[in-house]
Image (cartoon, rainbow, N blue to C red):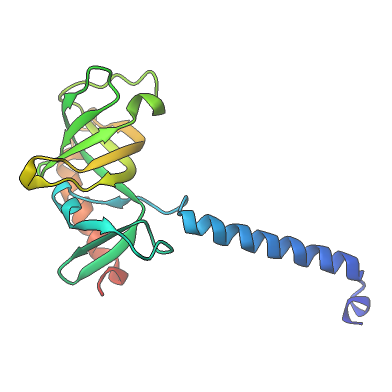
Length: 174
């Protein structure tokens, strides 16, 4: 009766309801994969405090250090390229706090010339946290890479950016 009062056909209302229901279901599935979750800014030395999360609805990885704890899917790191693999697909990145292994460059971009000494930004998925005692580095599969070498302030500002980003999120403290 309420549909007829508002001049809407019951079929149209049911159709719109189904579209909203389907959209809601798809969005909830999408959220479980965290495709749109922003990359978290990290220092290399912090990655050793990460572990696979048991609660995958909040994120694939869990960062826990002292009273700071949060889940995430993607990481954002910046640093200097210190070693490039022969095929250009893998390289080692030094952010001043530790070394990170980065993989998957040639599958992401074909004409990106990577060389020792470049200052780059990496956003990607953490593959392993490594083991600093055994000289195994954390590994990130790259999803985005940018050469920041032309900006002389990038390296200097990175430390402040990470500290600022991590201190602003009050929900991180549990």
